[in-house]
Amino acid sequence: MKAVFLSDAHLKRAADERYGCLIRFLTELGEGRVRFLAGDEKAGRVNTAIDDLYILGDFFDFWFCRPDRIYPEFQQVIRKLVELQQRGVRIHLCEGNHDFFMREYFHDMLGMDVIEESAAIELDHGRAFIAHGDTLDEKNVLYLALRKILRSRAFYHFQRLIPAPVLWAIAGFSSATSKTVTLEDGEVLVEKMFARAAQKLFKEFDTVILGHCHVPVLRYLDGEDRRKTFAALGDWIFHNSFLYYEDGQFFMGNYPVGLGNRRESFGEKLDIPASSC
Image 1 (cartoon, rainbow, N blue to C red):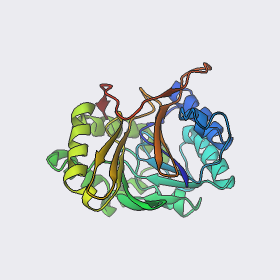
Image 2 (cartoon, rainbow, N blue to C red; image 1 turned 180 degrees about the vertical axis):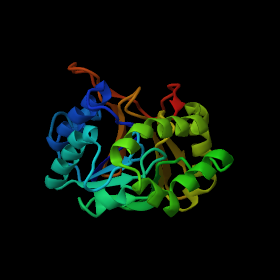
Image 3 (cartoon, helix red, strand yellow; image 1 turned 30 degrees about the horizontal axis):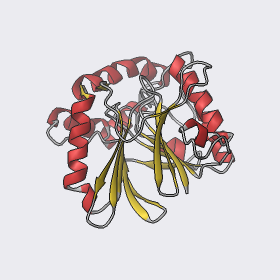
Image 4 (cartoon, helix red, strand yellow; image 1 turned 90 degrees about the vertical axis):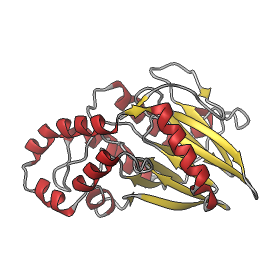
């Protein structure tokens, strides 16, 4: 099995550098260049197709869209996801704290898998827990209360009454509000996530993969029966980071900005400061 995991692109404007960078990355995924991109030197430049692409939340900076009214700036990257799907890649989108109510379009219209909270998946012979990760800090009561309101059916029906252009105009305010109540040092958040995985999630899962903290980290922990893997996916704002899985092995890499040929493997643990948003 071959899979790629990424999160926190916060796409908003097609002219943004990170938007174009992600488009190029998805194009190269479709061309089978993932081993080279991940810095897997043993594999060299041999092309290989991936089976699954997991996007673990905040792919978009907001998602107040309807099946017949998609925010125009998002159409290019959606077409790229559809291209990957047509090549046989299974697309999985986990909702984040910025993009939710996605099932109506991505699942019902495009046939992609939408994960509203978290999911347990099989990676060959191991079980993995995947989620955006924004609910793991149970002490952030203000955010959890706001999240519950924004994801309620009442709010869903309310936002459907607002004309799409008006809704898009106020989406920036909604995004800024979410950032305000969830803002926390990324390194601190990573440690909270890792502690939650070690104390609870590793009892049931071999691997825990999360987004949200904007810091790319890959760690291993020796368990009673087998080695446990923890991954925080970083983002496509500061790091252009992604996780690649193939036949029991994980590689954390970054995609370079611009047209250079630099490829870098992050190794088992990265300590790069960033703020979550």
